[in-house]
Each structure stands twice: as structure tokens, then as C-alpha cells.
Image (spheres, one colour):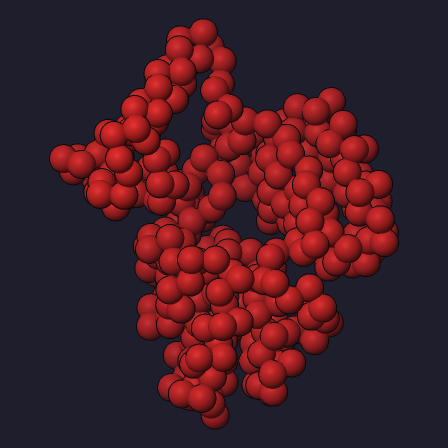
Length: 298
């Protein structure tokens, strides 16, 4: 069983580059894989591995400046969600293109048990801050989908739509909460006073709110080999098209356009013969690696 931790912490790191190599070395030593991002504003990541390895790695992360009280969202998988460990240094731990925002100015957190009442209020507009391919497999009933391809697009979308949403309470949500820390801080910086967000994100909601009481519809996209999870954080059976990287429902494999690793109905017209030949070669290498009992990382 692989133990998976999704985590983030906004805290000043004066020299994030100095933190990279020790964390990466420990991940490799303990058999932990996944991605962690370090930036001057803190840390963000999803890692997976054996429980003893994860305990050591998460203990190391909590020893970093300001991270002692960092929370993590834990789940499990029977197969490895990631192939290798990566620790990257960037300007932001979640890229909005606004690194100067103060996360201390984020909107009020709403517990999952209170979330249904908040978004059922007709004076509240609920906004999904995730990207379009994530929203495609599931969201809260009635939520506004900005249709953004990247979180960098969110500030522009808000500026274009702020007037029509004026006077409403704004309730925001995302996968684990980190994007909402920045999105709600952005709105408050631009003068919105009544803005809240779902504490712990969709993942905490799906873990804590009974399915019978839930306002969630569909699956929640996750950035690992599970692709989508539902209530109780159980995998939904979604898969990724390895050509366009969009999530697919299990039944999409039956569509005539689908070829594993090469095409799906969403990208059937997007690539030419040279691209398809390259994708088929990659799939051939994947199958050869599987036959050797190895994992292809390309």
C-alpha cells in the first residue's frame, strides 16, 4: 500500500535553493516519489511511498522554517501514484503570476460541514478556481466555471467578471485549498470584502461529508495516477489520455477515436501523423518496460 500526502505551507524561505537537495536526497533514500515545489513563499507538493519513508520525509518537511504545524491530506493507493521524486524551485508554490500577494489576507475558511449551507445561499456566488480540464470531470452543483486553461488566467477572468458579481458573497474552492489562498487574497486586494473558501478543499469535503448529503457531482481530478477520486477519496476509474493529458471517463475508452497513449475523442483532430507516430513509439517503449517489470518514466 502506498501512502499519499498532499500538503502546502505559506512561510518565508529566504533561500529555497538550499532546501532542495536535502529533501530530494531523503525522498530517494526512503523510496518516496512525487513532486514538491519550493519557493520564497513556502512549499507545496504531493508525495507517496511506504509509510515509514513518508513519515521520515514529512518529518523533515515539518522541520523546515515555519512548517512545524503544516497539515497534510492523507490517502492510499494500491499502485504507485508516481514514478520518481522531483523537488523544484520556483517563484511561487502555485503559479498565479502574482507573487506579492499576502496569504495572511486570504478569505475566511469554511469547514466542509458548513459548506453546503454557504453555497446554497442565493446571495452567494460559488467559483471553481481550478482549470478547465479539472472541472470537466466534476464540480459542485451550480458552481461558476471560469474556463481557465491555467491558474495564471484567473486574475484576468476575475477582472473581466468582477462587475457582474459585485454585491455577492464569493465562495471559492479548489482541490486542496492552496489555490484559494491566493484567489481569495487577490479578491480582497481588489476590494472584495465578503469572500470565503472551502477549508482543505474538495479532498477534505469528499473525505468528511457523507455522500448522501453531498453537493459534489462527479470526480475530483488529482495530479497522480489515480486521476480522479470521489467520496471517501476512492478512485473513480478516470484515466489520462497520454497524448493530450486530459482526463477521460472509463467509458471513453470505448469511443472509436481512442487509442491508448495516442489519441482520444478530445484530441483526435489536434495532432498530425508525425505526432501520432511519436506517441505510438512512446507506447511501445512503455510496453517494453512493463514486460521487463520496470516503469517507463517518459
